[in-house]
Image 1 (cartoon, rainbow, N blue to C red):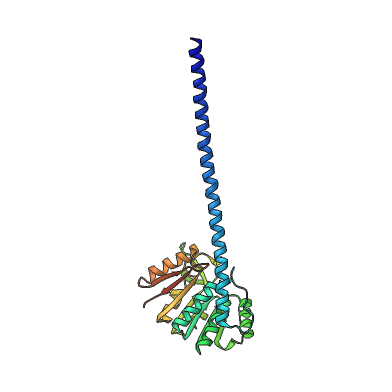
Image 2 (image 1 turned 60 degrees about the vertical axis):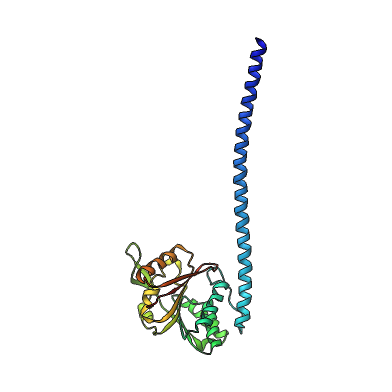
Length: 262
């Protein structure tokens, strides 16, 4: 009788020990999966970062070889355009050969477009900037590169406009007097301003403000298209211009290409 109880007690201890070990193994397995998942995410992020760095470097080299600038190009990326966006502009200008380009937000893109138009033998770019100091720096860069004749940098203060955000509040947009003074027959529009600090829909007036001045085959290029504000802007444009064509380019910050098809 004693042996039977002793055997039952031993078996009970063994079963309990096996259950405890099984649970611990299950917890360890889940913890291992979490750790491996985090490592994989970190590895993927690191690989993407390295690939993007390589892509921006090679596209900058391509850009430099194409433009053959007469002076050092200003730094790119961060708040300025990225090299892959600049190369996209080069391809669009080479393919479409625009006679008139309008851009919101001056800087490196102004230089790139001015160089491209010079290579094509003519055309003009009109750049609108809300910051007088930044506009002056762009003019200085154009002068250093001997490109002043093909580019016109205009200052337009950001003012409360008739365009409203989702709460019904006025969007701060470029001074109507400056925008209304723009000529017609615009072949290419580059939207890289105003800054996002003005609100998520701060760039949404660009298309409705210029729609009547665009040529039938004009293209509007929206930088930073991966941001939620720009996505909301594109949704607004789609609603206002149902026949527009929309394409995306996988640049560093995302780029949307819009054709109104009026």
